[in-house]
Length: 250
Image (cartoon, rainbow, N blue to C red; front, side):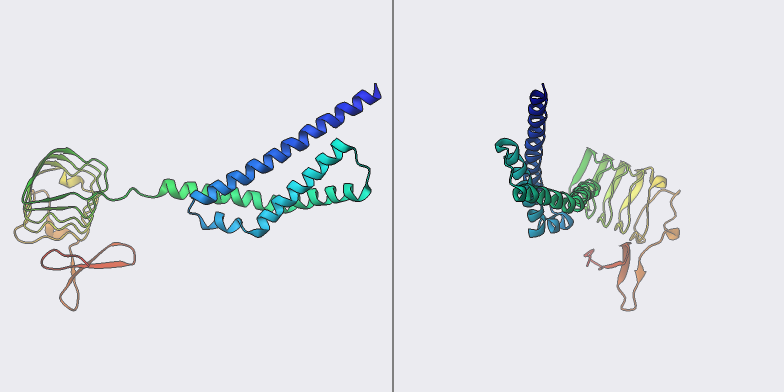
C-alpha cells in the first residue's frame, strides 16, 4: 500500500513538473510574439539576454527535476543543482513577469486611446450634399467655393479646415470643433445649430462672412496679428501656427 501511494505521489509530481515546463514554453512563445508585433519600448527592453537566461534557468531546473523523477537518480549534486537553478530562476523571473504584463497592458491602453486618423474632405468649386459625417475627425478639410447642403457634421472635428467662399444650407454644426476654421467669404446664414458649436476659437472671418443674427463674430476669439503682420493661432498646447492671405498654413 505504501509503495502504491509513493508511486502516485511521484506520478502527480511528474505531471506538475511537465505542466510547468509547458507553461514556460508557452510563455516564451507568447512574449516573443508580442515583442514581434508590438511597438512598445517598455516591453521590448525586457526581452534582453538576462530575461532569456532567467527562462532558460527555469527550464533547465524543471528539466533536471523531471529527470530525477523519471530515473530516480540519487546523486546529491544533481538534486542540489536542480533545486538551486529552479529556485533562482523563479525568484528572478518573479520580477520580470509583472513588468511584462504591465508593459503589455500599457501597449493595449495606448493603442485604444489613440485618436482615429483624420480623414479630411476635399471639395473645390463643387457641391457636397446628403452626407453624414457625425462624430468624425475631418480636420484640415478643404471645401472652397462650394455648396454644402443637407450634411450632418454633428460632433465632428473640423479644426483648421478651409471653408472660404462656400455656402452652407441645412448643415448641422451642433457640437463641432471649429478651431481655426477659415470662413472668410463663407455664407452660413442657413446653417443649423451654430449656437451649439463646441469651439469657435481662432476662427478666421472677414466682412464678407455671413452668419445668422444669433451669432456675433465680433465676440469670437479670432486670429491674432503678429509683429510681422502674419495671422497666428494655436489649437494645440505649445503649438503656434500661422495662416497666409491665400489660406495656406504653416
